[in-house]
Amino acid sequence: MIVNRGRLRLSAGLESALGESDGSLRVAVDTYGTEVQLRMIASGLGLGLAPRSVLRASASRDEIAIVQATGFAMQLDIWLIHLREFGNLRRAIERLTAMVADGFARYAAA
Image (cartoon, rainbow, N blue to C red; front, side, top):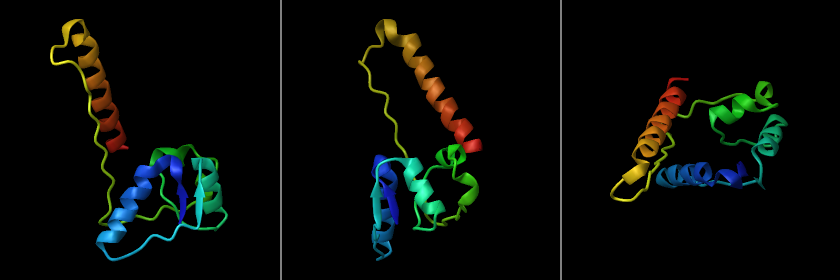
């Protein structure tokens, strides 16, 4: 496995999923930087995880095959933390909340 430490959450999710199925994750290369990771995968040096949006933007995208992993899904929790009373930030908080929700809805539809 070629792991990008900049995306620790993906690696941790995979390690957790493998641990639940009595598998183990053998890390062959630990890199910092998604493009380096994807170039190494495109060169045939191993497997890796990357969000589709990152793969679509990669110069290596045409050289990499996507494998559908059944029973494995990443989950992301986002918390908007603010004072109990919004005060003069009410419109900004409501707008930010709507923008984040809309962004995830568009991403899920893609």
